[in-house]
Image (cartoon, rainbow, N blue to C red; front, side):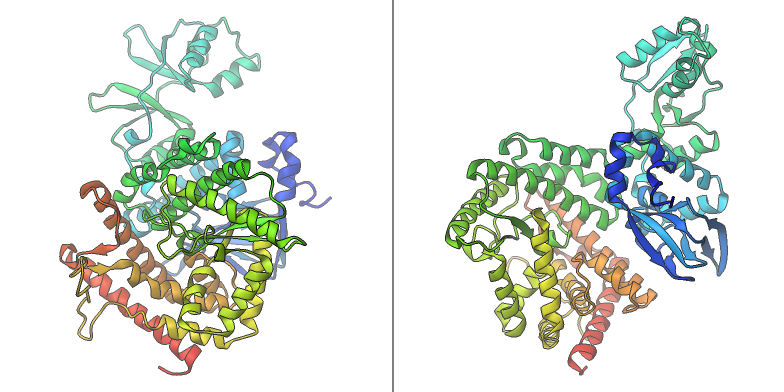
Length: 627
């Protein structure tokens, strides 16, 4: 029996309920890698799956000052990537190379995270592994440096503990029967209870895990005093300490719960390992859950404004822009999903298969706090095209109107499914794409830059996939299109003058301001053109850049420079948008006054714009043959 066949019984998958084993089993896939393949490079490669070695041998390490540290072997049954997905925003913490031809069983990050959310015992395996790693001074030093590095920080780990726990204490005396203490914990919805001595000071703690392992197993009777199963002395930490320190404290003492004390020295609550893991995504998760469980559009009306408020603190604290954009897109997807369900209830069953497409920034999963619609509908060709067209035109109006109610405003350019032009059967979309590729006039190139960044968001995604395959094949068969796309992209020059002066708007309400959205377009165009050339179907800019790097279309230095530049510009955009919403009480925009930037910001912007100039030179040389 191969590892793939018995994987559902492999720890930690063995802790999952048997009812879910089949679903998990079907989600796994085989991936083969030849000897000496480097799958991941530390702090560089994005981890999009959990990897379980089925056959072969791997070696992982962290390289510092040209010296490989934290070395280890990956043997069959071992996994790689879970810690990076959970604790490092999906960026590989260590490098991994296979030492011989190897086979991995892989599980997508989204499914992996869902299992972690739904099954604490499954997640505990990875949090425990992270804790063991953190006990290694070299590993802890690496994580600490990442926290100090604002651009590549883990902002969640930098937050004070007081921001992620609610003061909620359950207490009892040493003599309290175990059974009574358990009832008190249940009544207060607490996972632990603090034990007081005769002087009314906290002496120890009992957790739900203690009850499970010491009482439920029969080792102690429920009538015994709670002191018989308590852990003492109590491990505690200041509420002003960082989340990072809480993890270190838990794992250095091998505890899942620690007490939190305030400035007076008194214990104010308990924080658990589960609290720390779930706190970072809980607010976003709840908002998405609210959208998915809404029973009417009124329940998600203006939900986007709630998202803006939720993101205020993470953005102020320097949260990774990629995390924020993906979070916004995930929320948008949840809203779209629910609104389409509402619309289908009104319109009745569809006459054929269809898919709802999102384009532009939403299609690239790069939405900011400026939320307009860019969407379309593709449906299969039928024997009764007029009936199908009439149905989906009506459905599109219902969807777009309700999205507007939810806070996603109509596209000023009319690039929405409610525009009959963008609600078409698959054959017509293929005709559109073919015409835009073969006849490269300004209008068609504009449509290409918007619609070619599409992804299926709802419905039969096979239709979306077929259209994507057609697009890639059509471009491959007409290489001149990429030349025209490049020439069009080169019209957008980075806003920097010959002598290094930042160029600002010269007229209108934005006179004297720098347009950050336009400043980022060359990076988006660069990644799109090279992705289409290399047959990369993903639409997200950072994912495209990573794929280009793995295919050696970009060097490691080029990749890192572009990513850092992109993230810096996106961070400035978010800060500007937050400022307009919270401080100026206006709708968010992308225009920033250079006079309000620090000298360091000026230097960084100029360096990024010079980098963009080099990227455009690379494009021009490769696709037009001139420079």
